[in-house]
Image 1 (tube, rainbow, N blue to C red):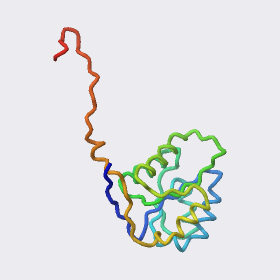
Image 2 (image 1 turned 120 degrees about the vertical axis):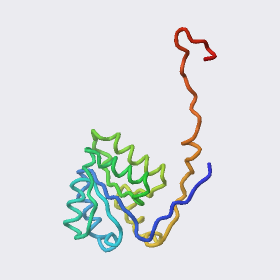
Image 3 (image 1 turned 135 degrees about the horizontal axis):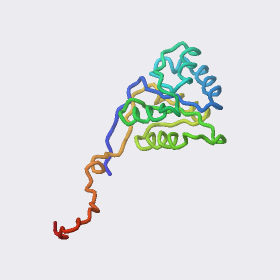
Image 4 (image 1 turned 60 degrees about the horizontal axis):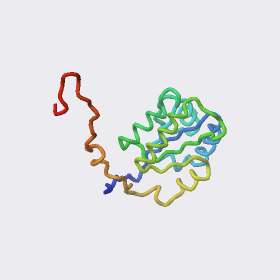
Length: 165
């Protein structure tokens, strides 16, 4: 499958998401990296966004809470090219009722080749990369052939209709 390049500007669009048991970790990480985050565009779900804006004194685009659709809003922004990075501190030990939403969000990040950090160590490596403050072209499969593929019909002839139509 051929690929196409999707450019990322010097200033990245970063989504910050955290499950309840990981919010404190994300807030501490964001406080430590405040100066780096300040010159990028930050998006966050629910109360995480409110706390980040208050703690960091930077503008945060706040979306719905994850279980109320915030994860899906971020996924839609990834598909539309409006998010470059996903930093999602999730709790692997806590069963979540909105787990399908979380899986869908992570799936969109992989489909659209968005860098994902799921814990402090990966977030530290990602944000400190020399690529963070430069332009970068993401390679994404060209999904045109997938979008225009022929889907076989399983339509069966109705009573009184011949097989030929």
